[in-house]
Image: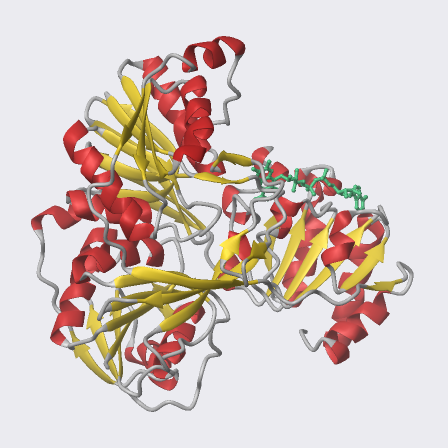
Length: 318
Length: 245
Ligand SMILES: Cc1cc2nc3c(=O)[nH]c(=O)nc-3n(C[C@H](O)[C@H](O)[C@H](O)COP(=O)(O)OP(=O)(O)OC[C@H]3O[C@@H](n4cnc5c(N)ncnc54)[C@H](O)[C@@H]3O)c2cc1C
């Protein structure tokens, strides 16, 4: 068995969820090849070595910098064939998922997405995956000889004791149809912690009354090195950008710590945050349903509690 | 313009998820079924596009007879006709294969669906359909405008969005704010009864995964309440008990 991992580069570094995918793959087989597209220096790529990759294929052709779904799928299929890899692992993301779909067809492979732990290979190849937006799991047999596995955040912890990987330049075959979609521009919040990757998330709801009150949420987030998020009505009303909306119809997050401020805890909101390890709820209504899903709760006015919490955190940091 | 909108028939977002038969069957007791919320966005945008120019909207579902009320609802919202591929969906590949076969016959300019279903959340059927047809697919698409044979779109990426342009035909996985959900009106509901709903048999029976059984997550422990005047206690608990900061 040989495993290939698609790793995503963001701002010159390998994304954390991709490092999890590498470490996940090294739990399946000791020989793990990673494939990366875009600008990253050797030191950055070697973070995948530390996570368990033995070889890294690097596509540095600038044409591949932007996340071209079809071109990536073709390149990964070629790399899988070259490496005789029967399993491709990647992290679920807005790039990983569409690439996985096309790749599974190209490879005639079984596909599993939202996988939460290492496969059981005692009798075939069975994965445990999240379904019903985190409300249940399914155990699924991947019946084909080849497989594509999309893993959910926290499916594996990142190893740091791997070795140094050999890095090879990789040249995909350009398929005529692969660059038909023109990417005109990309807008990305730079420097901020990416929400799907964040270890701590501070999230605000309609209880914050208006966009002008997000300063205290940002202060708290900054103090914790956290990403900011929001409930659906908040992004619907344009108080916050859409990519911060978590829940059933938004981003699904799985941080170690999720702090919900002025969010009632509707079942659709919980669906996007129920994979968090620890949930803190701050709400002025002691009957708010979110308290039932929380580990720690404070009944109180956000406008008083949040600044106090930020102060208390600053105090222990200094 | 010919648009095909793929509709999932899924438990309402407030449903209690439970299983029977030794965790091998989904428990449908008391569960209300709806059009997948993301598919509902796709359908709403398709109806707007049709209103702006002209064309037809066909909705498709791969499912057994129980899904027909969901397809009728899609007809009430504004689709012209419906196709039900008469089979219990086995996995993403199985479903994608059926949709691709219908799409090939129908020569659609746009194949739209939700970014993911809310039962299995895989978010891969659109990509598979596109690969089977050899055309581009974009997801999750947040805005869509058609200018002649060119589609202009924005797609959500981590921490932001990108603007894209591609020629039709295309497959799109949609999410808000592409359009607002449409609630069927009385006239829509009346006319939906007489709109055609074709039932066809699956073109290919193969699947590439097999579901063994389900599992529910472990129950959460009780919440620990902290006094609003004592936030340093929360900081202490997060640091020393939960060890997350
Ligand atoms: C199909 C479907 C999909 C959906 N998908 C999502 C989704 O993905 N994500 C999502 O979030 N929602 C989703 N929703 C909407 C969801 O049902 C709720 O309406 C929404 O989550 C409520 O947002 P909220 O908690 O911010 O607002 P509210 O429910 O209005 O809650 C505001 C809370 O703030 C508290 N509050 C008010 N003032 C203060 C104060 N000064 N200090 C502290 N607390 C205060 C109130 O007590 C209240 O609990 C979906 C709904 C449907 C039907």
